[in-house]
Amino acid sequence: MEADNRITGKTKLMGVIGNPIEHSISPQLHNTLNKMLGLDFVYVPFRVETGALQDAVKGLKALGLVGFNVTVPYKNDVLEFLDETTEEVKIVGAANTIKNAGGRLYGYNTDTEGFARSFKEDSGTGFEGKKVAVLGAGGAARAIAVKVASEGAAGISIINRTVSKAMEIAGIINSNIGTGTDCYRPEDSGAAEALFESDIVINTTSIGMFPRIDECPVDKNTVFREEQIVYDIIYNPVKTKLLKKAEESGCKVINGLGMLFYQGIYAYEIWTGLKISEEKLREAYACFVKILGK
Ligand code: ATR
Image (cartoon, rainbow, N blue to C red; front, side, top):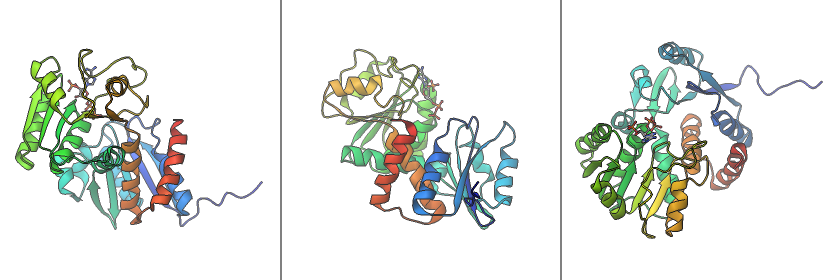
């Protein structure tokens, strides 16, 4: 038998905390990057039970991890255990990436930049001057709406079954960025109008995600215009019912694979200080798609 020399006394640790964590593909993505770039890091998943977040964060700091990701349900609660965060994290109220700089913990949100980069790359355009409709008003909606507003969207319509949650996001955008934001329930006539008039439609809900692939976050009578870009943060299936419907109307459609990939890439760059080349990114993306079996 050959010795296993992959982990030595010098190996540095990265990780992810969440609950559940078993489904996370981040360990495979980040360890693929470690291998591809020849870095002596290992990325490990940690399931953190309810009530144990503070101990977990202290533990990761004490053990000297270079950084870690934070996923559901701790992206908001982790903020109180950090030393510093970006302005964006303060506005969004969530961090998914923590860097340990000599015992000081810095919080970042790479979901926002991951979303923006994948949108721009796949659509060939940005948010400046665009009318954007956001479906849903959970954590993902908040991060995306703040990003879109901060990049100069002309207006945002948030459509959510619990309209009070949409209004909460609108309040945050209004007081921090000032972009005009309207809120609707899906059944409101204003919602159909806002959808029709928007340049970009973004689904941030889980409606249509495997295994409930026959569900759609917009009414069956919704008509898309071919000039519209429709983005779904879901990546399983790669083409949701929403995206199929939009594609039938001739719209440009984008799934959540790129967002998932780039939030990981940005986190990795924050921890290592490296800028991954375009060539390496393409190589990593090909592995990432294989990891997901897409
Ligand atoms: P995340 O943090 O990933 O965004 P979340 O906070 O649970 O997840 O938010 C999910 C969003 O999808 C919410 O806006 C939720 O609507 P409510 O605010 O009314 O709960 C929306 N959503 C999820 N399943 C839904 C369904 N079956 N019908 C309508 N809205 C749904």
